[in-house]
Length: 325
Length: 255
Image (cartoon, rainbow over all chains, first blue to last red; front, top):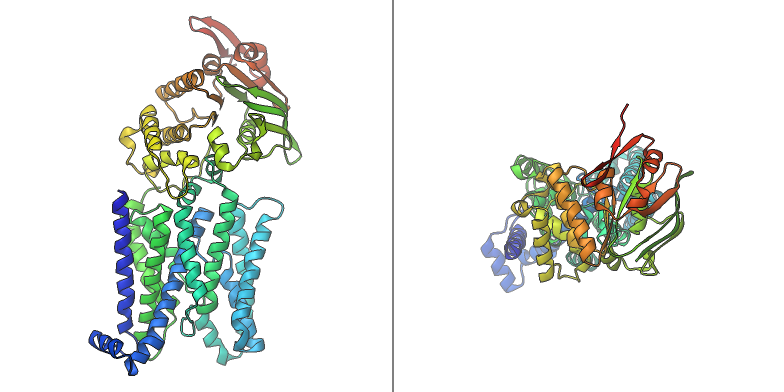
């Protein structure tokens, strides 16, 4: 049993890494395998530049983003005990978008990332604060607060979009649907992803116990409050890290944890790392398709993740294991 | 070992429980009785350290229960709440095993002793055949038995049960009550249970705590506390006392 799970985990990890690596061949121009090996060996030429300067960094960003989103969604579903929770349920993407779009219009592109961080950070702090006011937070208060905050922010975003010059509007909408064109790999996001994996392995059993409800979890000795704060800030930070770079890539955070639970893995020490691998692969594949399907036109990666995720989830929903409960 | 000193619980402006002073020792088994909404569950949550009382202290071995680290408190006091959110994806054995969380250290989640006690708990509550089943696929009574088994795996020194007889059939009730009575007598344990059946309380419990609707309470040995007069005041229903071969029985007089 123990070894079976480990084996399954190694399979998932290996398979997802290879699929992602394979995506180096595809793009606006396909590069055959042989050419890739040749250029890697020689270390020069056009293909070498395309691979090392363009495709490899892009795949790394996509993989880390997908991993972060899937883990964030997974942890939030545990925190809120709600299957509909995803990384953007608290309005983090709306906060970041408002920051980015607002600064694009007023100051130009130079400061947009900083304002994205500011907007998202404000949302994280204020949702936690509002949900805490007068009473302890609980899943219901948190969800409702988050949904309200994001609804309010979305209204402001719509206002900005309507009032912005038509030349900028398409780019803005594109970015909001998720777009990795200008994203760059950063050390700290990779580090963040690794720390979330470690967190879920070390606190795996406490996370499992959270699904018994906070009262029973407390009674068996879980420090529920501390754990909840940890989950909240780690999951939010993961979402922010993705959104400020690549926009609100949808669907990965919602769908991937369910996909893995449906195949029978639910203990967090396996569920979260597996989510990371599967989520990462899903975004890499979606991004590759988005770049190459209609080349040279690029589609928003968020559109592709939904197009991949929806059929897979609907297929799995009809399998028996998830039917009861 | 558990000393409850002058505990008050207010919810909003309503006084739910006032001035509860109880001392629970090893070997005692307490029945907690009261009408609906009398604050039985709130009181258990305070005893377990999950909620803080509006006033008063709860001490375990002379130390305030809020001064214990969470895991060490869970090894001393274990509460089985009345309700539970069912968001649990694992199988029965894993569910029952989670009761032993307080003994897990870092990455090592189960020791050999844990496996032994999980096996014992599954046998005690007749769940051996269900161990591999999805927890979600169980019936209400089976889930209740799995929950009882998980508290047995937690193995605290003071067991707090909130209406554990719900959903259990007669054999399940008898098994639980006689196991609790036996355990508190032989091991260094004690137990407090919210229960609505006066005759079971009279028969299986050494002590009783009555919570009246006006917030006052009455505690002592079951023999002293369980009288027709007190029961009529507690439930605002008339009772007859009948002496049977098993001792006294209380029969409600339904008009």
